[in-house]
Length: 98
Image (cartoon, rainbow, N blue to C red; front, side, top):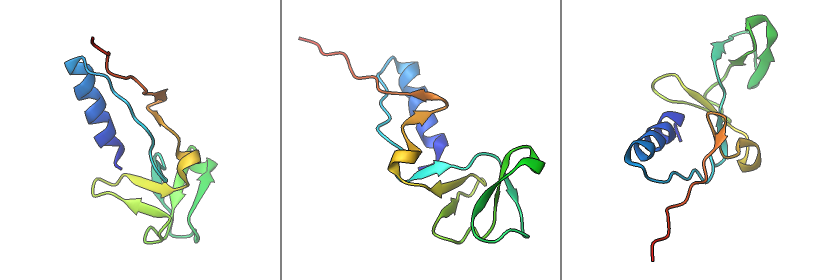
């Protein structure tokens, strides 16, 4: 799922005064700022020379997906991907009315 989708739904819920619950990201997580690196083969690596940005090569590998806007997500598994959106766990529930 593109992180902008989750943010838009969250923002719409907050604006409407509705509860927002993000169950999980699934197997995918946002890679963060990305730098193309044609000299690197085999996925992603931490690149301290580029300010801590993730360098990505071979985006056609099943490990990565690039959305049309350039956002790249990496298949890392549900446990690692977690439930946080912008540094916060969103587990609000609707108010129960009698």
